[in-house]
Image (cartoon, rainbow, N blue to C red; front, side, top):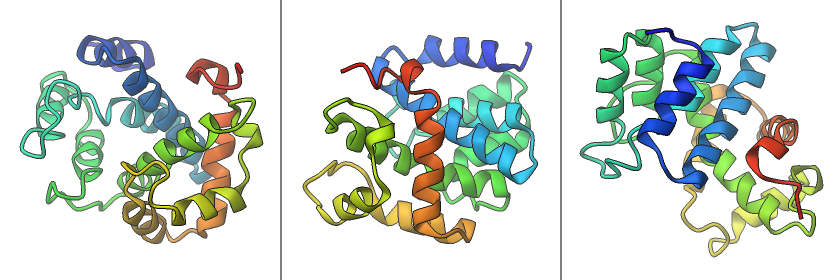
Length: 188
């Protein structure tokens, strides 16, 4: 099997029918690609990792199965072990350590992407361009806003990357703004 963006997207869509979950995967992919460029890493590998991190979530949403079933599928398809390890490590309960920069970055961007989606949804223009770091930080303190997002993991991920939280928020926001039309944003 070819391991490129097109085949990875096809695999994601075979396993994931929910448009919102596909958009989340595309958002995480965008952030991972942007960070790969920033760190001088392989944007294709990092992008595929972001795209496929929740491959099994729709079919197997329990802690007993996700991300383990997806990892099995990725290994069976011949994806690189560092991609599989990062996918396993993005679930804090998996017991898989985040030893690589790619794995740490995936963990750091996953929940933040979801939170930034919520922040953009409440903007009048539904655009990431209207989202400000100061408002994101304020909304993170409001436990009723985007209550399914694990704020502790956002903080933990930023710490593991060793990056300033405001810088991280802005970097991920900008990476999402660059592809917002593909993500279904900025269309209000």
